[in-house]
Image 1: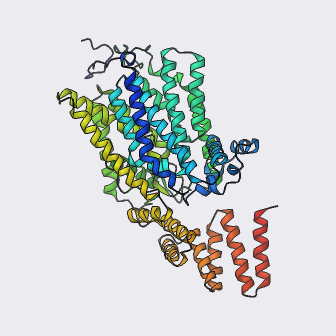
Image 2: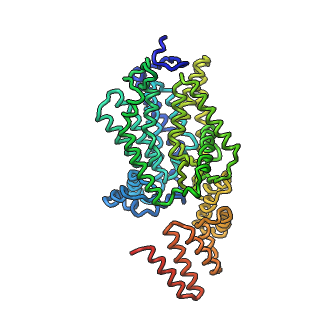
Length: 544
């Protein structure tokens, strides 16, 4: 067999039956099964409440969203930097849900559940049409549908932006193959529009142009390697330089999105300063987090909505050990470059994770399950294609691979069902989070808040005090300790706690609450001047 267009050491692998020759019934049946699988797994979320972690910002206390799809809401959505993001499509999605379901969380959860099911089907069709492998594509999509690490993105209403942006990403990726089959400006424009809509849902898909370059290498095989074209592609061959130039308009859209995202995050104060987050700390955390994401992809346990950032506490052996693992995998996939899916899957994982890996530290987390929604597709592709090739080369019984796939998918679904259960109420969610991530002052604050909502103040105060012990400069715990002291008559101590909260917080609403409460404490102490001073300061912050 000719080796034209191959790198040294690369082998030609025969391609599967083209998609057009496959049975028309099978892919539709597999798609239907993916929908049933996704909905059956996530159906319990219809009985879950909103979470006391950003859901107030996105839905329950957002007056713009609660106005529904009005012209004023649309105008606000396209100029708002609320929640530290510029994502107008996400805001409009929430507004539409509120217009249909009002404050009933069941409807909001239902929309996210259906979007996730749609994403699983889109993923299957995009992979199948690009590779011709229906079985392998189905297993990747099924793993995506039931993997426990994706639970957070689906059951947390505030993460609508993740499932929504993924939908546009997959539509754009599918449209790209359509464009490649017959390059036209109109078809390219559709790819660009879908990409832009995805960015306006969440900027996590900003690496899409780079993903397309990987897609050109495999499975489309339209990238010329060396001086001669590949011999097994049905698409016209182009050099890397030409393919990069082809993506320039998309890179321009990505750059514009990056500017808007950074403006939004800086406006909200989410980007940490270099002094509080040095480069060495960020690089160390990024290396260790990459390895942890792989670990959670293969063994998804101890999952939580908030993993505290380790700061400078990581040991040298953890960082260098993580780096060795990443280098070893990289060498492995490069040496097996005849299996192009390995290199593409690995670079997909590494590359699409870059915007969320913490090189620019945004927020207080070391990593997040929601950040893996897109990147882990690369790991799933590597595993599914690699295992299938291994079974084929070893001439394993035909039934062995489907049997193993079913067992793995069932095991993941059982673990995901258990993870979904932790989100059934706020107390359960944050109790579990503390169990698997302690010490975690954010989880302590949110568990305290959940208990306060249930009028369990005496239980809540212990968690606020623990949060303040873990992180003394935490404004939320200091505020709530002040509230507790005020309720119990220790007004002077309450005032001191409120003063701490006002100094420490960047939240205008928390400052206003603290000033008003402090004014009431001064009034009860008989200090009318101080009380009036606090009330006037709070009123001034509220504006006209």
